[in-house]
Length: 562
Image (cartoon, rainbow, N blue to C red; front, top):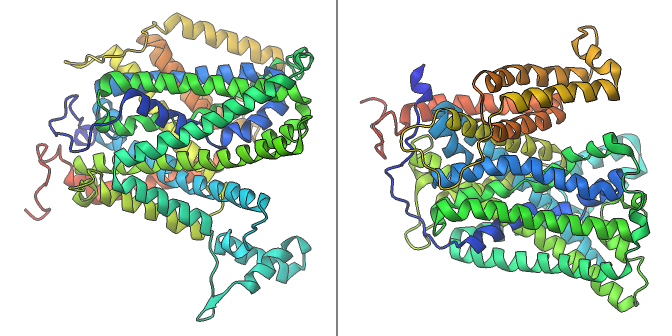
């Protein structure tokens, strides 16, 4: 059993083969690119509609919650400056099988997550073309499986809602009788971004910096113009829906901050990873928080907050301003273009991140050696990059957006929880030679945890006196089971926090991630369980036998029959 938990040393003997060219500004731009995607163009509207002007407070709290995990990532990045992100950190702290599970879950965040990003980019690109009077036929903007199902629905029921899908299916060109149906924009952007990631980190850096400059510039333009028309009286009723209802928006807002962890996959390409990675994570979170708060203030100051529950709140708000038609058209065009650019930059960062995780896992012997190869000219993990492109592109033929979003969040939050727990453990029992350049402030967690637990119980009883009784009543079913599972998770971790006086901030980061996982629902837990089961089968079929630690850190282990 102990071989399953064999741990990677803090100082890896392998010499990185990638180009170290990323400065702290480049790394910060990567963080901003990963964080600011569709959230600032759509999610912020939903949050504003639920919380009113208090959405600014929600974003601050969301930043603090995300920051708890970011601090743990920053400490690990400064002590283990290698590619692999949470996978490598877990390998150092908890051992091989836990690291494999985390690496397998990171595939959900990066590769599977990019399927959702590519589909979202396609939607924004279609809207942009439509505003220019260049609509694309439906058979070129939808995956064939979804279009076929909708066409069959029309044939079976005659529901006019599905008539456009039926007509598109019939109108699609055919080769040998097979209709040519695809989400062409999503496939094309995946191919272009994969090519950029393949030809070099320098080119990827240039493209990313340019896209970040465009979308941040667009946000600042919106803020500058909108500030002249803000009505401060709209902020007078700051928390119209009450504190409890406002706090329910924090979970959704938290996901607008996901992406900072992508920085850690580029550790071996950073000029000074121990110094620059922690700084870039904190800077990117701070910059994005300020931009989110600024946009939220402008939106809630321009129109009644109830009107913001729409997919495109920025375009809606600026369409109502007393501006000349030309200026209004320019602003809406800038917003549309920046949304397309924002999604493309997210796609690029994650398309850079996933190959480097596979590269690290291959170097450790847990994946085939081909995935660890570095291109002799471009100095990128080229085989892993091509594989990532295929993993994103192929499912576009049968995937829809809603099917992958929650699974992506599950993988991300599990990685957050494990890394946070790892830092708490390292604070409690640091191994020899553990000297990170950045440290999470070590606050003994015993008494603060007990105080916060007591306050939470009192608050829950105050808000809903029956909630605690329902939690322990075995006859009550339904959604209450989610919180029972959360309680079962919190009891042992809470015990360890009190028993060993564990560091408070990392443990709060772990508790926050576990809570958000519970909120995603049981269906997604089952999917994650199946995903992990498949991953364990692959580990015991290959990784267990080929692990570099099993063969004394040799890059190429002997074949199984020796």
